[in-house]
Amino acid sequence: MLRVGASLSFSSSRNFARALLLLADFIFFFSSFSIDARGIFKGNNCLKDGWFSEISPEMWPGQANSLEIREKLYDERSEFQHVQVFKTSTYGNLLVLDGCIQATERDEFAYQEMIAHIPLCAITQEPKRVLIIGGGDGGALREVTRHPYVEKVEMAEIDGMVPEVSKKFMPYMAKGFEDERASVMICDGVKFVEACEEGTYDCVIVDSSDPIGPASVLFEERFFRSVFKALKPGGVVCTQGECLWLHGDLIGDTLEMCKKVFVGGSVSYAYCTIPTYPSGQIGFVLASKPGVNGETVTFERPRREAPKTKGKMF
Image (tube, rainbow, N blue to C red; front, top):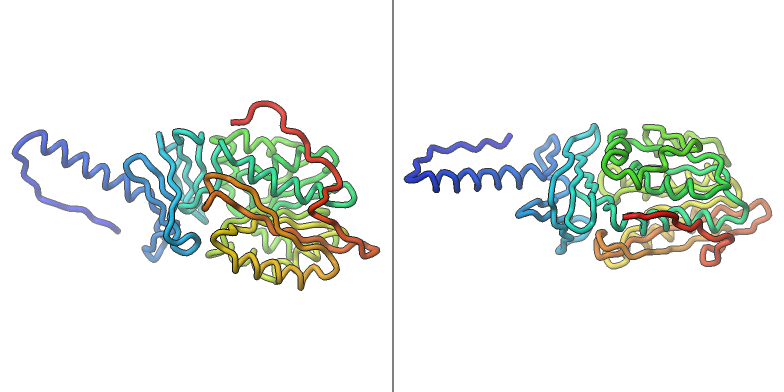
């Protein structure tokens, strides 16, 4: 517990008002942090002087991304993480989980379109059944439901607070939840995919957070072997693949591991630019299970076009 106590004397009401403003700044600054049971700061984000700064010595040491904030819209702790929403000056509403930027209304489409359309357009046969692990903000789900041949899309999201917050504060991103083909299961995605019957899905999309803490298991060989089993012959997986500028070793290790798991299939890496992610870039690890006759996909040459965006976005 943080206790602030002082005995003060003031020569004027102006000094008293100034002290109150300093105390308010102090409380506002520390309210932006998430503190776990050991008293350790999680996320290391800084909210000061009207600016939110995303700081992570583990994932992007020595640099930070900042956005000007107009208003704090939501600030609660779920069973799993600190969930915040801010209104920014130039990027619309901003969703933050444990101090890390997840999405803004202005640029979220750049990530969501890539993580959904690259795998769905690469599969030889039209994909009918899709699994999303994570992705509770609903953006990847929205993009999957834009493919008319998809008959069923399931989401395994561990934190039930995230979909509800996204529906309220980022409704365009969350519109996929309204699709009748979509079903959302609030559960551990790793355990869910481990329990899947072999050959269940045409496509698995892993919309994960960074590989620190609980999300680190989503970058391990055991998890990818579970995904391989869950895929139909010819099926594909696309997972969040970090930043080329910051995580080259991690990306290389993940690609080599996928080559061991998806023997006879294809393994590739794609990326997009997105201004509010670290270094303005995020990648995607792609892998395919070989088909019944040994054929595989070529991610660089899609089999079908991505659906066109309709209507106004941000």
